[in-house]
Image 1 (tube, helix red, strand yellow):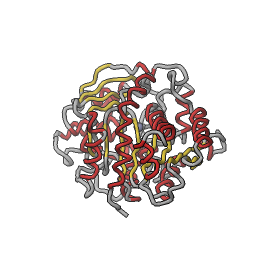
Image 2: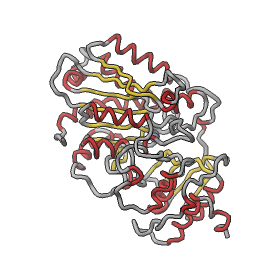
Image 3: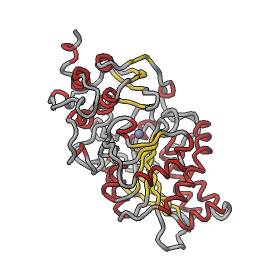
Length: 418
Ligand SMILES: [Zn+2]
């Protein structure tokens, strides 16, 4: 009987108990009650391996997602994902009926540096400064916050940058699209894609009529690398780094001040297991918006009137709208669906709330923008690896370019929510 050997490891007991409930429908099938042993008990220092997981029912993926299993490359239609897990986690998943098979993530087996073609944080900073110098009438570059390390008096160069692109001479109110990337350090392509979009708008302004019109009448705000401390870890060879550098790391994308830890929501307590465990990749931090990286993004919503926003992650082909922990459509759902159908739905991305596609999320950028600032805020997963070859990023950019331009075009039609 495996039960004795796995109780005590919080994640495992929650997975195991969930499997024992025997009820398949939501939400009754989820783990009731809260076992204190399930909190903060991730075994540190256990060796981890990459596996493929295959689930059959919603309880299984919801339990993996909320337990804080390090899932990535999720494919909701195929009901598969990859995971980086300990042997004990594998046993727990198998005990719940989840199929687990050996897998690999070859691009992560690196000793140092970024794959060829990618820019480092320092190179990105130089490029942003060069844009500001070359296009003073179109660009506003701002240092919008310090990273956690910098707030601790370490890494004095680690600033979070925001770049705005618009025709500054046209001072009429414009709809504004904000993009954030690099919230999760190991996800490399989103940073490059946002930098490509900026470069495209600037270099084609006055040449391409569509781009000229968009830059004259819209504003694009981009924070191309939010988790700078984490990203520098990746650049130094820690290719799996996801969270920020505060303690064992806080997941910035669970730290936002909107339903943080499901505050004010009636959800099964098991949904909080990963959020409450400092060792998990979805640890939500000591309090809402505790992290300076989170505060930097939140402040952008406070300072600027953001019409719509997209927080870009990797990897998978998915397009999310609020509310991450709900299946109930929000009143504006058709506006989101229209945008999705006219953009990333065209290239086969799955669209929906996080819970309808996979498992519940909360304290995310997407929920925060919508709930607290009435922005049309969204999330995305792009690409097919954390570290695609740069030639894949080039291909992705060619595919994305018309979709991003179309999104920028369409935000003009969004009704005011404020
Ligand atoms: Zn991510």
